[in-house]
Image (cartoon, rainbow, N blue to C red; front, side):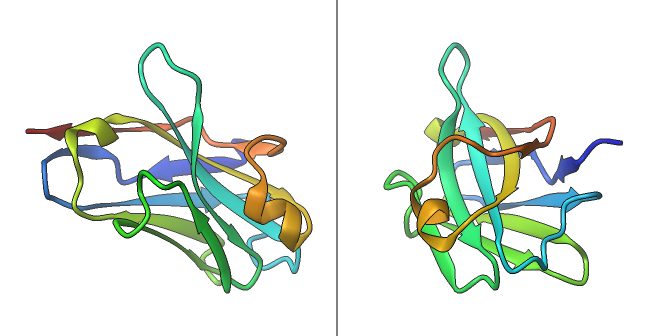
Length: 128
């Protein structure tokens, strides 16, 4: 059973929007210590952290490169979290992965590694 499944990737022109979804099967989004994130990987590069959200969704963090354009959110009944991506740029083109673990608030806000659950990725391509 795949723990996390991403969807919503695709091709879009610069300035457009996409919403990525991450549906969890065995991971519990409603957990009081749920720490969920999005990462992305450019061809030939290391995977990089994009955004995180903690537990009830009142604590989020973003990479400087996406701050003000991307928004992470969660839907507890659907056991899913999202990455709303607006004002997309060609440099946002990458494979996007969702990740999750259980942790404390402080750890979650600064964590860039150590996530236990991963999805298989969804491609986002932004053309100029």
